[in-house]
Image 1 (tube, rainbow, N blue to C red):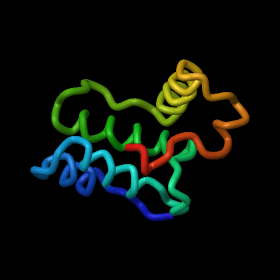
Image 2 (image 1 turned 180 degrees about the horizontal axis):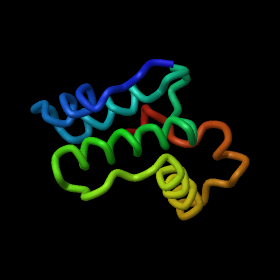
Image 3 (image 1 turned 45 degrees about the vertical axis):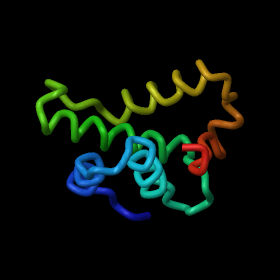
Length: 97
């Protein structure tokens, strides 16, 4: 599994590409198994890294924990109608970003 640093994440956010292109690049970076989908753990990693970047630039006063990120991902998936069965497999198609 590759490690995505907050520096890499920040560089993608700061580039001049469109928001859709930035999301596509970030989703691809976090698709560690290269299956074209983001799993629950990949989405959680994405959220944790985003929170660290936002904390580093002063937007968040305290970083979120891995548990808080996982809870947020599960709640969001539930809200959009993704079942627990789907959560453990593929939940977000990278191509649709």
